Structures are given as structure tokens and as C-alpha cells.
Image 1 (cartoon, rainbow, N blue to C red):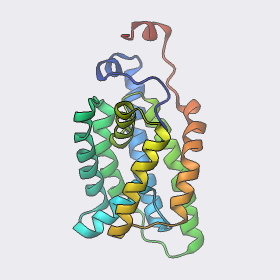
Image 2: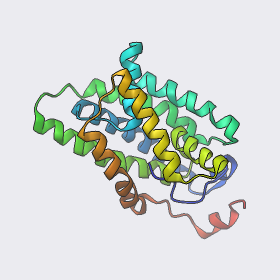
Image 3: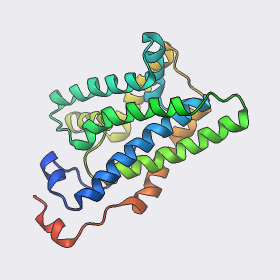
Amino acid sequence: MSTPPSPSLSPLQQLRTGRMPRRLVQLYAGLALYGFSMAMVLRADLGLDPWDVLHQGLAEQLGWSFGTVVIVVGALVLLLWVPLRQWPGLGTVSNVVVIGLTVDAGLAVLPPVESLPLRVGLLLGGVVLNGLAGATYLASEFGAGPRDGLMTGLVARTGRSVRLVRTCLEVTVLGVGLLLGGTVGIGTVLYAVAIGPLVQLFLPLVAVRRRAADREAQPA
């Protein structure tokens, strides 16, 4: 997923930034939609994004629900922020819990689908909704998710490019997930190609426009 649309804010700055009610609604709506979009792609069964390949593989091996694995992996990734000197925001912590809960809720609502046209429709709709949801919660400016924060922390600590670090992370989790039984397919390729442009497309539509007084009051 793309990096946040504005310069990274400290946790205190995130809370002092204006339009708090609008931003909170946007944060949790975005996270809930993100989890539901993941459930759509899972039901399509045509391939998952790299992290979800890992989540699915772990769920199959451990016998846990997909959402439980998402929460546990997110919490473990968040622990890796400590040596990287990254500080989680409200959105970071919420990301760990809300997405896991809503993906399980989505899977409970959406039945397995056998029709290929319906599966393709679920895949396309899920990827587009994922892009909108990602843009929505990123634009709330409450911090990136644990996986994106791990990437940016490694970039800061190693001095390597975002492209290189992200590629290495995603290839690693994809390989491990594949070995554990996760699903790789056309959906994996589609997600990799489409998600960045989709997030960039939706960001201007969901950006929170703060008052000038709020921007001036924001700590440096």
C-alpha cells in the first residue's frame, strides 16, 4: 500500500490535528471496509496479496480464523517497530484489531462462490474497494498500519529505497505463505499492479481538508 498522503505525524500531532470527529469516522470506516474487501478477495479464490497469502497459509496450518491470524501477525509486526524506533498511532493499533474482526465478519456474510464470473466480480470489486478503503484510512492521518510502518522503519534505518525494501518484504512473506499453503494467482498480480494507482486515485476524494487555524496550531 502507498505511504500516507501527508508527512508522517507523531502520535501527539495526530491527536492535536483538527477535525477529530470526521477523522475518527473516516479511520474506522476505512478499516472496516478494508477488512470487508479482503473477505471479498478471499471468497474470489483467485489469488491474494502477499501478506494475505501468508495469513491464509498460517490460518490453514494453525486452524485459526483468518481474522485471528491477521490480528496476531499485525501485533507481532508491531513489536518489530520497537528496535526501529517507530511510534504507533491510534490508526496503527486500530488497524491490528479492526481489520481482523471485519475480515472474519465479511467471511461470515459472504458465502463461498463457485461461479467463475462471480468470483472474477468479487476479485475486481474487492481490489477496487481495498484501494478506496486504504486511501480512506490513510487520509485520516492517524498513522500507517503495522506492515507499512515496518517498511518505512526499515527504509529509515537501512537507507535503502522504498521500492527495494517493500519488494524484499513482500517477496519474503509471499514465499513463506506459499509454502504454508496460501493462494497465489491472477489476483496476486492484479493487486500488485492496481493497488498503488487506486490508492492514489482515491486519496484526493477522501482527503480531510483542515481549517487554516488547525494547520497553524499543529506542532512542528
